[in-house]
Length: 291
View 1 (cartoon, helix red, strand yellow):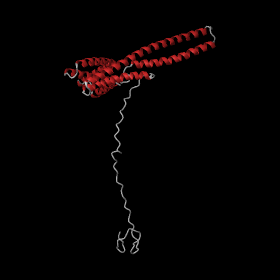
View 2: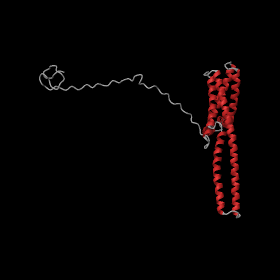
View 3: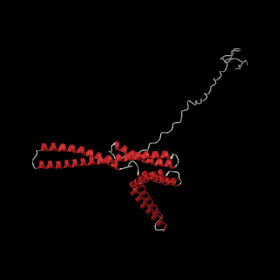
């Protein structure tokens, strides 16, 4: 630095080494930290977001977990078969692999359905036995009451017998309620799907059936595969239709009402306000069908 008094170049000290004048203090230079780029090793690899798990509707309250797992397995296999049909028609899987997996899923589904039927028969039989025992207890309670009224048994004996039978009755009622919940769950195939989801599944399989038939016409699938899968698809469609047939009939009638309403409006029988009001009401009824 240069001394302001003598003009000589001097080291940056407090006083000039030549004339002794106090030197101005230089401000310390502030070095800005340079941003450091992380090395390739430090850059975290992108993490794929977790796959969202589809939340199913619960079955009837009180059903045992093993029953829900069985019924959930049936639903999953129906969905897997539908997805596999989609993959095949889009060319994402070869015919050989498709047929192998389709037969595997069909076999598992049949096993699940057989297990369901066997369990349902077993529970219904047990339920009938428990109901018979409850009926017998009710008769015995009535009998004891009459015996007490005619003086055959004393009040102490009466109370003891009644309490014993009531305790047994309460236990049986709990068992019957649990059995009823299990039976209802087993009777409700695809019960963990909304009606709208069952309808969507049916439409998806119908589209696959049409695509498969077209592939057969174009020679893109062997006749053996076509006949096996087509027969199985038709069985699935009949079953799915049976689950929502009443809802589809109701929707059909409401849509006919909607069409009639529109025609009446075009013929000037209805005002725009009346037409829009009634149209909203009918559409709301249609929406409720598939909730």
